[in-house]
Image 1 (cartoon, rainbow, N blue to C red):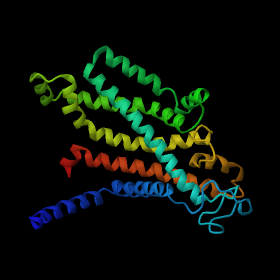
Image 2: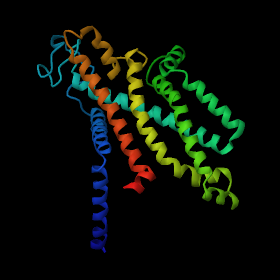
Image 3: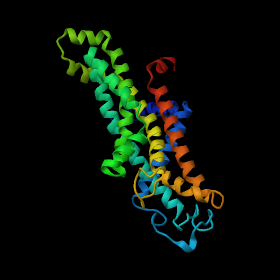
Image 4: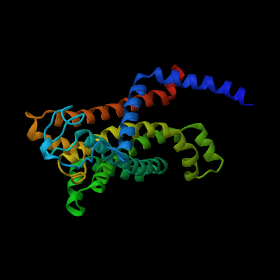
Length: 290
């Protein structure tokens, strides 16, 4: 029984590999994000040096002079700080997208199911929320509860809610007009059951793609908050604060700004490419063309 199962599995694996190779965005984006996640996880148990360890005698050392990527103005190892910063940035961005995505999806499916005045109120409320930049939200939250990881997550998540709500509502409205949904309603199924059995499974692809793209935006927003001092407090390393600290030393030590800036740019690029690749892969129209 094992041999026939193996023979059936091999063509499927080959087809999967061919699909990924045939979509460069998906392949390259997946590699970039895979490396990022691996580095972030490794940083939890190992870094070349403690990220917060100061060695003033070795300050502003260029790459390869002391450590692989050099040191900052306090003699801290830049590679260790970048590795630890990867976890901080990724964990904050992912948490914000999960919270914002859940709330936005919930509002979107409810507005599509209820329609009428309820839908109009939710969409107008989303417009108001979307008009408030996450940096301003973080400043207001920081005035009440202080800056830190929680403040950054909530500020970014609030900005994500209207994005997911609009995408979900638009996709759900299309599904509600399908024949099989009308048949389900005729069979006596309630709104909640139809939403769980028919609406959410059929819009999950759009939600996944949107979440992947929003992760890149969340990384960029978290870096902006940290740059302004509204993210995680020192000594926890973040890419945004590394950029802020490097402003004074741009002429003497340009690598202090280049390295975290490159990390942010590659991460955002990776999530955008991965999102584009997933959109092509999960789009039914694309499947019919391929």
